Image (cartoon, rainbow, N blue to C red; front, side):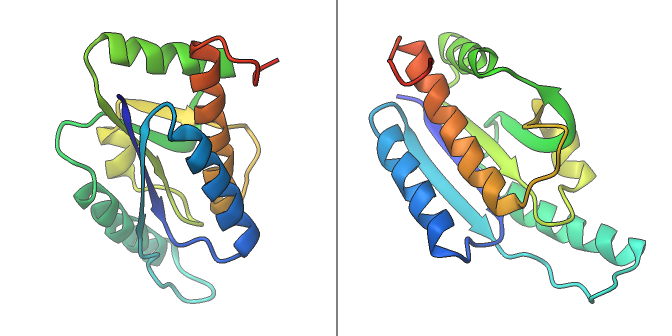
Length: 160
C-alpha cells in the first residue's frame, strides 16, 4: 500500500480546516497510509525584507526536508509547477506504484512559499492553480485531489 506524506509549514488554526482534512484522511485510509507532518512556521516581522523572507524560507525548508525520509520522491506545491488534471495526477501516482515507489511526499510551504532547496530537490513541482490560495486551503485541496486520484484509479464513482 502506498504511503503518502504531506509535509506542511504551519498548523491548521481553524476547526473547519481540521475537520475537512480529517474527513479526507478517513476516506484515504482505504487507499493509502497517510502521514501529515507539520513543521513550525518561521517568525518574521510584519514588513519583512527580502533577506528576512529568504532566511525564513531556508529555515522552513530545512525543517521540511528533515521530516521526509531519504529517497522518498517529493512533490513540491508551487505556483510555477506543472498543472495536472485530476486524471493526470491519478495516472502519475499509479505509474509510481507500478515503478515500485511505495512512498511519496507532497510538500506545502507557508505564507511565503517554499525554499528553492525544496523545489530543487523535488521530483515534481505541482501547481494546484494559477491562482493563489491560503496554504491551509491548499492542504484540504491536495487531500481532496489525492482522494479523487485514488478513486479514479479504482474506477470509483466519486469522480464524475
